[in-house]
Length: 89
Image (cartoon, rainbow, N blue to C red; front, side, top):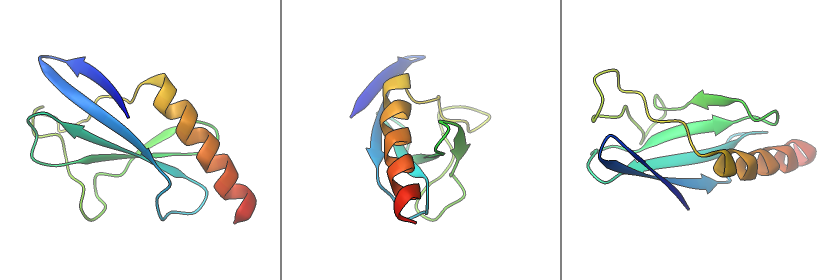
């Protein structure tokens, strides 16, 4: 679990294996937002928002709904998972 503080709020990031092929998940939660956010991490480390998937939503703490990018360490760990998943796909 990784955390960052932005604009007076704490965001927690959890790297997860997920159900998708060849990508890993980073689930983001906030100390005040009512929804969870999702980033899909590809093998090259690029991020794709997954807020449109069931169970996830926009960041209610920001007017644009965007979740802060995960810490580099979380992306690194997710990238390793995505690479491993691609080998078994």
